Amino acid sequence: MKYPIVKPYLPDQDKYQDYVSGIFQRNYLTNNGPLLQLLEQRLAEYLGVDYILLVANGTLALNVAYAALNISGKVITTPFSFAATASSLCWQGIEPLFVDISHNTLNLDVTNITAEQAASASAILPVHVFGNPCQVNDIAELAEQYQLKVVYDAAHAFSSKLSGQALVNYGDAATLSFHATKLFHCVEGGAVIFKDKATYEKAKQIINFGFDTNNQPQNIGTNAKMSEFHAAMGLAVLDDIDLITNKRSELVAYYSQQLSNITEVTLQLWHEKGTPNGAYMPVIFANEQQLLTVVETLSKQSIQTRRYFHPSLSQLKIYGESGNTPIANDISTRILCLPLYTDLVLSDIDVICAQLALALSDVSI
Image (tube, rainbow, N blue to C red; front, side, top):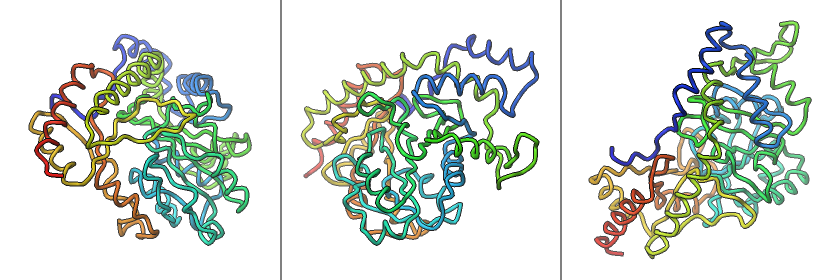
């Protein structure tokens, strides 16, 4: 594929090898090793947070957050997200209550949450879709009114800011994915950011089989630890994070400029106080036929695209098909992500947008 949908960022190989050489010298591979501790410290400083816990992947990050916060029963969430958002709930026997999204921000619309849903739930699980900040103040007010926990699925939101502050500072917990396709990655990995120390300390036990400092189980736990080799990749990538975010933000800005000349597509409306992180490049078409034609045309030119997120999660029987979500159901048929990765150059975007426009010229509206 000439233009893949994503291309993982790989740091300088010698720099990564320097970190790995230290692992071989110490013969310390996992269990809260020195590289993991260093990565946690550096990420805490970068994100401006106090309590960050690294784990093996982003889905485990969600599961650990639910367990640490004693979330059970029913949870209000969005149908417009990756499968892990709903799967992580169902995996722990929690029922997702799907609430419809805003047609322009693509985030869960708080005004669609009914009093009945709020009264029956134990928590709200919003997603900062494509890194776009949710209605955090409205969510906090509703949560306080109904005594709900708030866990933000911030898998897309590394480096996203709201009013100058890292987006992961909001909620009782926020989770990150450090999968290879993310703008910051550890090959596989994730993190949970907690609001208070007591919950953070509990979560530290949960990810290590529930053991306390005396290696005695004090909580029902699991094995969610990140290895030293994954932490090494994270450190090497974090060394380049300003280069990565600056380049991706430049690419998204150029995409937006070029796409503004194509009247058949619209873009996600970003929060007015939010700072985009350049994580994804979604475009919304007028109808599904336009999308399918674009996918076919671009594929013939070796330009890969992906339908994030289709179908909406509320339409899948495995998650219970709960909730009236016509907006999410509709948007999911008309939205497509275009190639975006650090190695992409502006002339590549010219080619991609030109082929997109050409495909649309052949579709009868």
